Length: 104
Image (cartoon, rainbow, N blue to C red; front, side, top):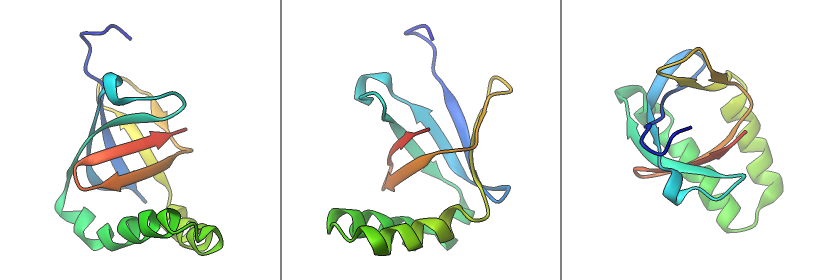
């Protein structure tokens, strides 16, 4: 990827658009990618799940986090590149406000 390129993705859960993700390479630290997240109206229905996920990890409550995470991913999570046919179907993603981090 060229430095001048901006990678943008559609973030979906079960086919429902939850928001748009813009990769920010300068904030990324392999294997984690980072960027900005702009939520859709549909994200409001699941925002509390993502917030709870972050809280459980911060509190090192891994077993509870794993159960919650399984319910989050059950419908399927995807990041779809807006400018290519690339679709990431296996990912771990954390959303905090407008900040997003993920790995695949």
